[in-house]
Image (cartoon, rainbow, N blue to C red; front, side, top):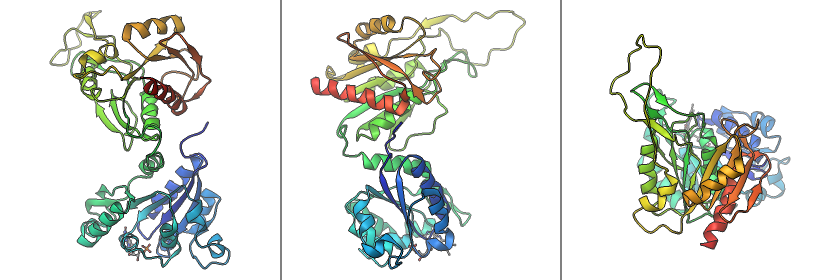
Length: 407
Ligand SMILES: Cc1cc2nc3c(=O)[nH]c(=O)nc-3n(C[C@H](O)[C@H](O)[C@H](O)COP(=O)(O)O)c2cc1C
């Protein structure tokens, strides 16, 4: 199974910050994602972490000295710059940022950055006062206007023990930033995609809800895939245990009614709505204001009322004419998958529906894979093989793209 970083050549620049230890994790995450990672350490970085740590993880060259006769750079000092798909400098010290802003090239990392045509991601990490210093702010602004992507820094506890703006963005999020920057001119660039995810929670009282087993993984994977193809993505998410996706505007809701309201607004100028959320069909007629006490009664009847069909009403709830929106529904079925899904297409005015058999072992809720059948409005049926949810996301987007071209 391939992901967005598979076979990508990433040059990871590491500079002299206490946050260097995190870049070992970052190198590991890039490598696990299938990227070929070449690491360049500044002299100062080698005081914090060793080249051996990186080499053991990446199994590739680690450069510390541009004049090292054993390094590829001694033969061609801009070799890494030419081969890179992307440069990621994490952590980026105030010193390196200042040198980059002024075009200096007095070490292997700076020389390579100056010589590359690839996109460059900078993840500053430093003491808050260093970051807020007028010179650093000026330098960061220069790098941004030079077209570099600045990731962070984040706010939090700093090595000094103080709390402030200066922490390096976490490796997991830097992986997301790297994927996003690599795909920013992708085939969905300029397109606005709205994705819903997770299982809605319908409140019985302040502590109890009626919900379902949706993990949100499918919706999050679609949002991630759309982001990585250059789309502007809004994710409307019911409660999930999943971490936020960097670069994806996420609006958190709980109930079906909240989801309906938010989607109505968000779909106004969207090119596509992909409804991966498992929206409860029913909600309690009445939500109790305080927690229902455990009583001696053996049974408890809760009256339910039907929730509105959100995607069927997208056109009518959006304030402007949205006839060109590509509408994608999901059907989690355990029997008569094709028949039940086909019926939903016309009822909900969908372009196509993604049906998954929730009874299959590697499909449906919670797992990272899915085996889906796509049923189009014209009756065409496509049975896709078992894929990662990310790959399913891309397969759905391929068909959304065809729909957009067609409309
Ligand atoms: C213990 C220690 C921690 C440091 N942490 C940082 C830091 O987080 N960010 C930073 O910009 N500089 C930090 N510095 C200062 C840099 O290491 C120093 O400016 C160095 O010249 C950076 O060189 P480089 O940019 O070539 O890696 C630290 C220095 C020490 C001794």
